[in-house]
Amino acid sequence: MTSEIQSRQCVDGDLAALEATEPPGANISRNLLVHQAAGTLVYAAAWRKHQPAGTVMLDLLADHTPELKHLFVHESGQGTGIGTALCIWTEAYAAKAGFNKLHLSAGIENWGARQLYARLGVTPTGRATTTIYPYVDDNGQEQWATETDHVFEKALID
Ligand SMILES: CC(C)(COP(=O)(O)OP(=O)(O)OC[C@H]1O[C@@H](n2cnc3c(N)ncnc32)[C@H](O)[C@@H]1OP(=O)(O)O)[C@@H](O)C(=O)NCCC(=O)NCCS
Image (tube, rainbow, N blue to C red):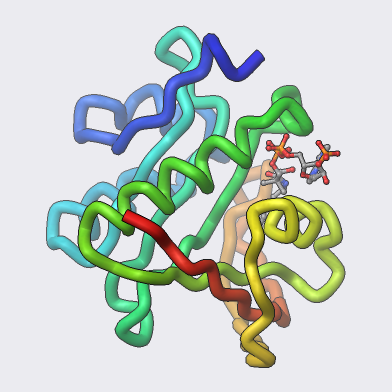
C-alpha cells in the first residue's frame, strides 16, 4: 500500500489539494504554509496520486528540541503504514537538519498513536502538557477542546 504513497514537504502549490480535505473555513493548511514560509515549522504530507492521504508538521520552535505534531491520516488510509511513513520522513528531515532528537506527544487515551510511537522506539520523558484549543468541526462551526498529552522523545541518527 505504501509503495504508491510518497511523503514530501508541502509547497504553496499544494494548498488547493490540502484544503479540499479540510472542513470549510478551517484554514489549517493555509496557516501552516504561512508559518512554514516564516521558518518556524516544516509541513509535510503523504501523497497518493496528487491527493494528500495524511499530514504532519515539525515544530522548530518547540523548546529547542523540534516536535512532531498534528500527525493525521485520513480514515480510509489508517492502518496501512502512512502514519509510520510520515513519522520516518519527519525523523529523517530533523536528523538532516542537524537535530539529534525530537519530541512527539500523544493524548493520554490515544492508544493508536501510542502504539505507533512505541513501534518507532520512542521513550517517555515523564512530561505531560494540557492544551485548550479551538477547532472547526465538520459543519464549519468553531468548537473548543481540551487535551492532555504525554511527551515522548526519539533519538535520531543522521
Ligand atoms: C494515529 C495515526 C496517525 C496512525 O497512523 P496510521 O497510518 O493509521 O498508522 P500505521 O498504519 O502507520 O501504523 C499502524 C500501527 O499504529 C497503530 N495504529 C494507530 N492507529 C491505527 C489505526 N487507526 N488503524 C490501525 N492501526 C493503528 C497500530 O499499532 C499499528 O501497528 P501494527 O501495524 O503493528 O498493528 C492515525 O490512525 C490517525 O490519524 N489517527 C487520528 C489522529 C491521531 O490520533 N493522530 C495522532 C495524534 S498524536
